[in-house]
Length: 345
Image 1 (spheres, rainbow, N blue to C red):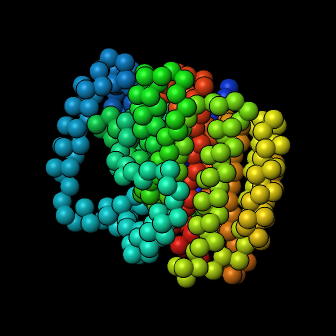
Image 2 (cartoon, helix red, strand yellow):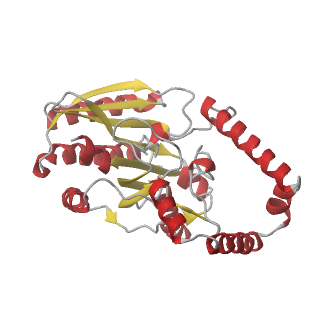
C-alpha cells in the first residue's frame, strides 16, 4: 500500500513506473552502483556479484551469508553492541506507549465488519514479497540472509494469503466468487530515510484487504470499496473515545478508469449523507501512477491545531491476479497509520 507506508504508505515509497524510473529511483540505483563498484575494487573480485547471484543456488548463498554474519557477530563486543543500539534507527523502540496502540486496536477491531477475519502476520515474508508484484524497489526493504525480508507492507503479505485461499476455491470451481477479507494490525519496517512530522522507520499499520473475482459492472469493486472506506471513516469519527479530537475528515478518490466514476459518485453521495461533515472529492489519477489500478483513495484528518495529516491510503491492485495468473481476480487494499494518528492527535 502506498501506506503513510518514517513512514506512511504510498508517499514513502520509491515507485518504479512501467517503462520508466522515478528520479528518486535513479538516484538510489546510481548510488548503489557506485558503492558496489567501490566494494568490488576493494575486494579485488570484479565478478563477485555475478558469482553470488548467478552461480550459487539460494540455499548455497544463504549458507554463505549466514557464515559471514556469524563471523562478524563474533567480533562484536558489548560496548560496540550498545553503540549500535543507540545509533541504528531500525532498532530503537517506538515512541508511542503500547497501551495506547492496544486501545486503538481494540476500538478498531470492535468496529470491524463481521466479514473480515483478523490475522496475525509473520514478521517476515518471502524474499520479493513486495517487489515481485508491486513497483517497489527492494532497496526500500530489509532483506535477510535466509531468503526472506522483514515485513514492509502487510497488504502484500495478505495478498499472498488471499491468493492461497482463493487458489483453493478456484480448484473446486474456477469461477468461484467468494470474497476473502482479511485484517491485520502489524508493525512494518522500511529502509528509506524519512523526514517530516509523524514519520518513522518502523511503525504500526492497521490494514484491510479484500480479494475476489470480477463480478461484472464493477460490482465487486463498489461493494468492497464502500465497506472499507466506511469502516475507516467510522474509526476516525469514534477516535474521541481515545481522547483524540479530530475536527475534520477529508476523502479524496482518484479514478484511473472513468467508467468507475458514476458508481463512485453515488457512493460518495451516500457517504456524505451518512457522515455529516465529511468532505469528499473525486480526482483523476495521474497516468504515471502504476501502483494502483482503477482507483486509489486517501483519507486525511485535521487536528484541533488545524494541521491536516494523511492517515489512510488504499486502492485496487493486480497482485492476486498476478500471483494466480488469472486476470479475473480482484484485490482491494487499505492501510491506516496507527502511530501517525496517535502521534498527531
